[in-house]
Image (tube, rainbow, N blue to C red; front, top):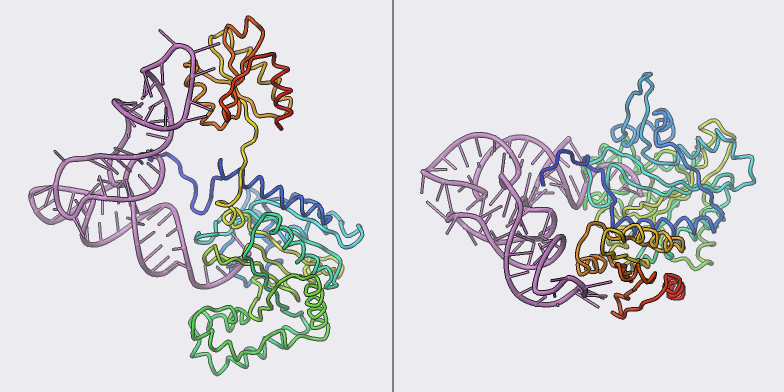
Length: 418
RNA sequence: GUGGGCGUAGCUCAAAGGCAGAGCAUCGGACUGUGGCUCCGACUGUUGCGGGUUCAAGUCCCGUCGCUCACCCCA
């Protein structure tokens, strides 16, 4: 249809009935996070551009060409947040949250913005629930996070998911590995795809993530970072594996799993599905032990992950059982009955039941039809006869049976019903 | 930024150069105070937009915009 204004490319209206799925999923995730001791932080959507430059890394694609950056009226460069971790770390330091006992656990929920070409499972404005825990470097926390991640997805009812983990080392061992990797590829550069040739200089770890057949083949002989870790990282990773094996979590070690942002260290993980097309990660995260210090704090290890809400909703959409809430529709006949119907509706709403009255004068038949299409369980019938007798009629649209009595009786009936 | 596919009624889609259609949805009636089922009726169009070819274009050609999937990158 020809409308005057359209939503922007990559931006989305979330409307009924989908919004009900969102509410359900949000509730499940947030409840579970709280059970694990996580507390919400509400963070600004706009931050100083510099926060992301320093946090995510200047050389990354996100910072280079995917941020919504603009100048405000005072000429300051601001950016719509492309991710949440940088803001969370800023808030952690700015509000001195490190004074609480470690680990300090937080989550946040809201839209993120990246200027990318949209595709399945990817929008320019997309919603993430981010989870961060500060102050503990031990792999027990990594393990707990993985348990929690799986337990969240289980609670939502998702299955056929794969948990992949890897360690991408630290400042002590990663440079050595990158050198080794570049040594390996140096005389094979002409066999790599154009993208990988670019990656060789810019982000060599990403060569391991390439899908071009030639590059995949070359990868088989390439060194794996897991075998080049320093003592600390190696021990950390081995301990993590032991924990999650003992816990009984199914997972795969993926040597080619890397991270897009500069701040990640040691543990990297991703939970993927094979049902979403190319954008297959529903949850991803990892450890970032240097970021707090880099932002001016004391040496504080940290780990976190983010859940892609659109992807979760996509996965669950055709499976979730959206049971209708108990809903009452009040039919009334004649002008003098409308206000009376409104008062009865208010009375019913006090019991946290959805109640609405008909608007516009139309036949009782049409009113009941309207109620039926709305999915109402009961209609109340309120005409001049009922008004005179100070009674109401109510009809159960599921069974078709009809009763007459005082409002109290109906309300009592409803409470038993629920 | 690059490449593929698709744009016809509110929605899903027909019409293979010759009168723009169907189903669903919506609204109303059959039934004046009783839903669903059935039947009947009403409604909706600059065929995304602009140009070209043709006696004739939804259909062919060019351009453009939009949507979508994939690459890049990433949740």
